[in-house]
Length: 421
Image (cartoon, one colour):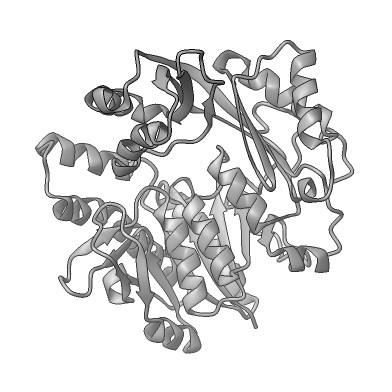
């Protein structure tokens, strides 16, 4: 017997028929003798509708009431899932976050889980019941107010619950059947990966891959929760396979235990939600850069790539960096507000840029990975505007119009078009 947490995203529970299809996946695991808890998102599009109603009611709304409204989407789904499972002969009941309970801090709209008390969930599963839990939400113990975890928070809820109940695996059901070497809509030869490491998935999620939310991967890595990504839209009448059909996200040690052949590059991601900012004639002296990025950090604006040009003869330099496209207007306003302190001449912005990244643990032990990337792009006349690196990632900033071409070129350059991986 295994203990499994199964999470279904918005597209997998978009209507009652899809909820019924998802429930058949749950029943299949229960019939195989496994103990199961289910975590659900709101129906596809419902959270956006609820957010719209809140903003229509008041632009300056109370964040606590915002959470009370938007958390209701998951409550509907959880109730419907429990009803459908019960109709199928699977004993089930729904749980809201506060009923588990899932404790969070009081950062309404972007709360973080502080504790999950799993006693009730464990008891229900031991009795053969399937708890259906609302994702995306929790409760502040001191105030009793409902909180939400931010967009994509249901993934985080599922991983946290899997850790709390000591599940053997956390299955994330979505509208794709696994993690691919790149977006199959861009590269037809993109291949589904059998397994990737937590670190690789974390980097892929952070640079544009939309399969899993970054916080959920980070939590899975911290708590050593084995995660599987798979589709809820496959043949739900098929018997359970001997080998898992999706993509496993596991530790480096487990990946080696699965006898997986290590690749230099695991995947390529692209993110068009980037904007470039250039500050000209910044004083070339100690503390100047701190004056630029201090106010941005205080405003929770994430800065990614940073380039400081060689100082000019007059003791001045140009500083280039990127921010999320949605934060460009706020970034400009903050910089103008602190212009006298920073001492720059003018701001030049470009929202028509994209970040393309290669990710792979193979970079740790192989030289020349970045050089291959730069040469492949140069051969196709793609200009690199900025570069950032980590131990297992290289990202470049390019013109937005060349994004798809760059992804295809790099996918071929690293041998990912072949069927060997």
